Image (cartoon, rainbow, N blue to C red; front, side, top):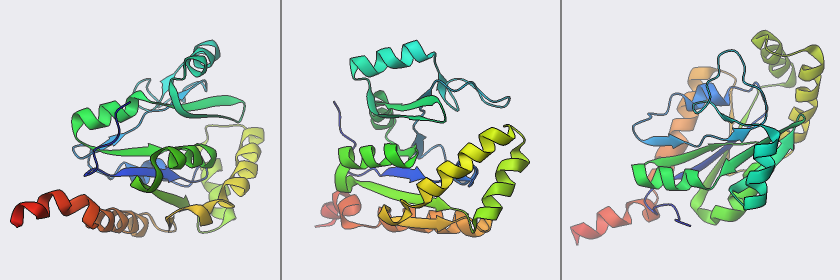
Length: 202
């Protein structure tokens, strides 16, 4: 399997449902970043498109992919399966773009084990639990029971924040965006990322 180009970033982002991960990541320029698309057995929401937000597949198909070893990581959350295909690495390399994963904490751990120190892990956290609850309710996409499940999962996921390289608190969207961009700019300035360009100067 092809590894990521050493000059490109591999970014693993996690955070509770409703914390604003997708909104923050949408600010990253698509010309430079490839956003890994996960497979899921969850039915699409009204504004989601197959092949853009997720690859929506039947459970039978997902389980067959597990058997074939198609996934870098996979997990079952809220009664649905989610997984990251190995093919996403090849797509990012072919396009010459930084690879961004938006995954929950268990998947993030598996990806970190796979990529090792080459991966940058970022946890997006809410300013407080009440704010997260209000954001989930305001989406209006799920039942009260599902919201309760997501809040219980959020407590679990927040307990993993300390294991990430960086934590961005999304208390204000513009501030959170600046923090995210600052992390990426700093990572791009590390010697391992610029050495190939520097050696041409000597």
